[in-house]
Length: 335
Image 1 (tube, rainbow, N blue to C red):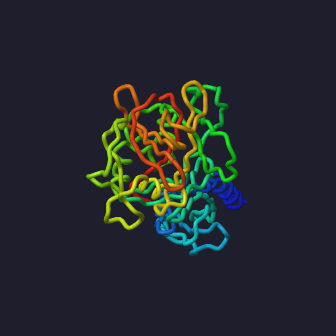
Image 2 (cartoon, one colour; image 1 turned 45 degrees about the vertical axis):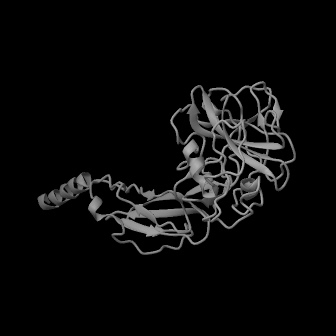
Image 3 (cartoon, rainbow, N blue to C red; image 1 turned 45 degrees about the horizontal axis):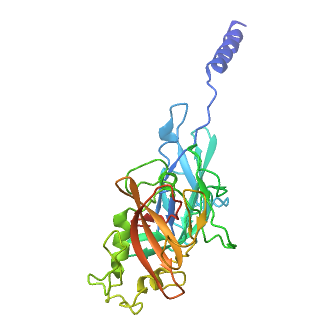
């Protein structure tokens, strides 16, 4: 009888001392989080933990397309890499299993762009991009933000706000018009991200100069007294696109349907008095103006393009009042 009681109490004691297993916590990072069809994404599950302190016994498996078809069975696959051949938004799933068979999972969203377009992760808008010289440029005006009426003033409230030039724009090609401060998101440093998507930035004066230098000739055929920068951009004769030495050659390259793919549409601007305009002061034709992130004293530098028709126009740089609302093109060094 004494032996039976001893065994009974021993079993009770064993059950009381047995700890309940806590499931693992799956976690991983993806670098980069946004890429294109040539990007190799590196996945790292080192951040996964086992609350019971048995992390070395964890095993891993990955489902790259998040379709329930695992790319491998559970094993020591803490690190993994993958690529995607088709642009889109993909879910990558990780499952982590501990030594007691408990499983947890984690899903990460990866954005995969083509080499000719990018997706803004903030609002899902897709922008075509084009490489001119050594940099990649938006081939459409930035269009993020809350629309305001022309008579309204932009507020310093942490919300991106924009004006929209009136007119028929079913394809949303006009984009937004932004004051300099709004475009820079309150920053004053050249090349800052501003309101561009992550990894992109507001082009500086030098960024624009480098892009336009692809078409530049050091001996322009004519000069204008109303230029501020003293630089007139005309194409380099080694670039086979157009009749370079004629007036308006750069405009023909950069306009919508131009051979560079930059696709400038003259959408006008909003002046500090809350009035939309399409002619730039006394210059002829319709205007497309783009803020740079550069300053000149109390003024800010913009690049102005005007169209005097489908084949005639020009490109200049000016220092102007930062309260004007102009278009934005974003730029980055590589995709």
